Image (cartoon, one colour):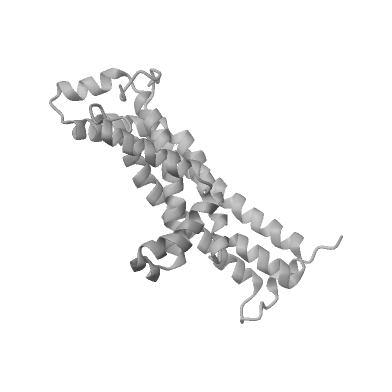
Length: 240
């Protein structure tokens, strides 16, 4: 078996090298993952919080339905629904680029998983956290904002790290709707050059570097925000 890394310096027919094409694709991968992560965190935090609200059964049911819907439908199916079905139902969305549709699909899919982690984090807190907020005269919104959620997010940083890495890897399905990310680059470049080994090894390395960077950033955040001596009290806390 011969290895020819010179393939990345060859012209791809459009005036750029395969190396430039690959890094452009890497940029699209990071863009899809980053934008999706923002949506996933915003909606995940909101839905996860709604699932733990006391005396709000309809909001809890809505949040539970959100989680079950987006968590139980395969990601690829959700992307096709956003790409082919949603613009038909809402004609105004026909003008949206496929990038935006994929970001919403991946973001909402991941938000359901993050919502479950937020719920678990809130319910892992001691009951005294909620009672302390009530004793200070906080409203429910203020109690969550200043007392419960800051503690809950510190607890769930490890699973959030895994979910963030999974989101980055799940962005590879964007190729299905012609987003020029790494997986699509690999498939097309391999067909054009017949150098699949070199192409896929390089793409694998970029995915690995990206995921490792996410891991290190989240580990740094976890170290900075951890509370020395804090021990999770179990699942008898904020949600009940």
